[in-house]
Image (cartoon, rainbow, N blue to C red; front, side, top):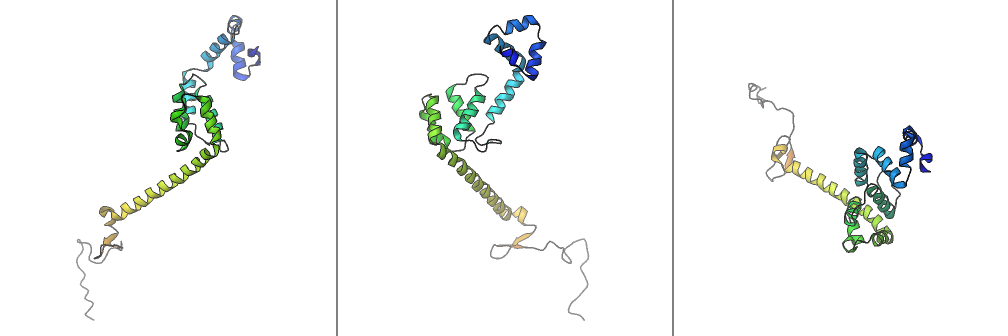
Length: 199
């Protein structure tokens, strides 16, 4: 009997029940499953599992060596652990956690609702899917570099920012201006009486 194989908290929970309830819930797999679900799989637990499944990504933390098929089966198991999920929604959730390019490589638009066909394609195109992960990382790095470059350009082209330390010369190029105060720059001070021509 399965209840006798329970461990730790499950063991304590089952043996804390009155004998009448123990007999009732172990009458069949359906009654036992219902009792376990009612106690352990409450709404908070279900929400946490759903969030965990939705956040799964290919080669995420702790799964750096996984193959594409490992990711697909892992995510499917967690997504359908609680309730069945329509095929299209299941594929959508799996692709969300995959690198850009998987959708095109696997041609998900013509699967026709066939899970077996989907996992066969994942297995057959395994190397291309792994390469898509590397390509996505390179693309992200290029995008980050472009953003930094545009930020630098905007700093030098913005007159409000550049006016303090840079000024345009006659050719329109920016030149650095010393930030140290010059004699006579402050209007609240009198002009110096020093005449360099007189000695």
